Image (cartoon, rainbow, N blue to C red; front, side):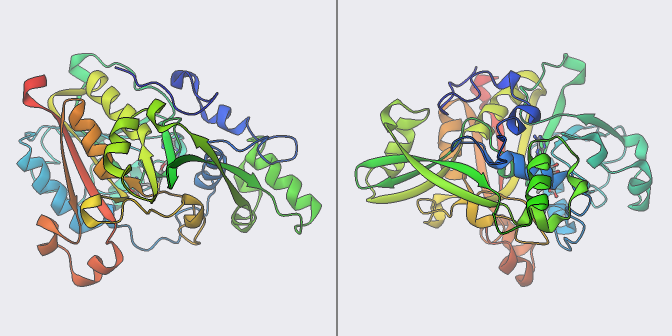
Length: 371
Ligand SMILES: C[S@@+](CC[C@H](N)C(=O)[O-])C[C@H]1O[C@@H](n2cnc3c(N)ncnc32)[C@H](O)[C@@H]1O
């Protein structure tokens, strides 16, 4: 199944979209030629391949020990078995798994670590330092910008996992909508290199954003200096992907600002069609919003999340309540749990709760009737 693209003139064929395509949108001036839906990808891509990215992050909610307990519980609850094949998307240098409950990780369990650039993934030595046996791990290049390839039955996975991944990349279907009165707008972005930087520095940033030179050729502070401009383009919501579901949820409100995770929905559908074994599950953990908490309809612009050093990068808070409704319509069972309420609340300390109130976990399976 595929969903039609929303972004005007962009990504008509997601299979053809690659990081290089994103970067080619940077013009001679180092600024996007016009406002686009996915301009932020160039900046994030430069950030993630920079050697100082992530280095100072002292705490990561989803790779921490508590979440591994939650994951163990979830795998058992879902009846995924013990000799698991697990694929982790957008892994980066993070290493989790060391606290996954025995015997989930040992036996014949195998974890395939993936990211868009293989050099980002942990080495065998790093796994050993975490007391993990490298024989249980392998590495694969997979960019979220690519359609998920179809795997033969024996290579399919029981669990696909991604944390802090979908919120870091703008696929063509990832759209921020703003409503004012009866009018809906789509937010478009443009990167701007400040003119008060030395001309040579401006040129260096341009070259990095265009992908002509490695981002390690400039200090992180120069990437952090890049500004994000936003523009609103009026749209007819009745003709947009998921327009009806969006109108059902938010049409009655005078104002709204929502991030629709169409890219996540697209890749989830492909994962179940092409890579997840029968009875398998997809777990997604992110900073996200769910309208049961009452504020999905007024979510901050991703531009505001930009490069809060040292964490860096730009992320957005996607509307998981909406994603759940859409995926359910498409034949999936979806559960959303968060760190502050529900079953998590007894596991996490108060300190963790305070710092992670927006961390949600979405568990997706095919509805039994669809198998
Ligand atoms: C915020 S980090 C999260 C890392 C790790 N999953 C965690 O939970 O700590 C975002 C990850 O998305 C990855 N990423 C960026 N662009 C990507 C792409 N096009 N395809 C796949 N992953 C990408 C980055 O390399 C990075 O590892």
